[in-house]
Length: 90
Image 1 (cartoon, rainbow, N blue to C red):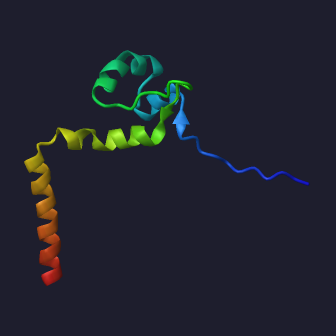
Image 2 (cartoon, rainbow, N blue to C red):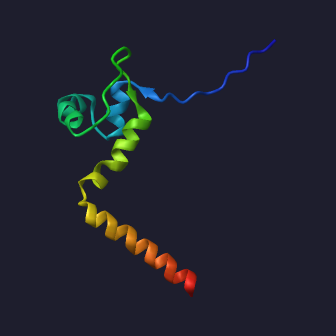
Image 3 (cartoon, rainbow, N blue to C red):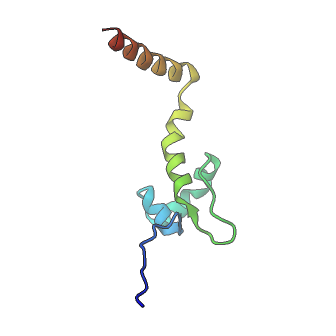
């Protein structure tokens, strides 16, 4: 009986791949990791040393949003809503 194997995309990745996800060499990643962690970058798992890929992607997506003042975020959202309402009303 043949065994069927499925390709599994890892969600926990070693430091080399975490560095590559950020477009960095491993040496550069290790050099700046303390600063990244101080800015909320997700730490590695204490047992495996691997990084959560989804958490890295979420951090990357949110890092600039957090730096915008709240009123700028609200204005951006208000503009989108206003434009959509205007289009709906014709």
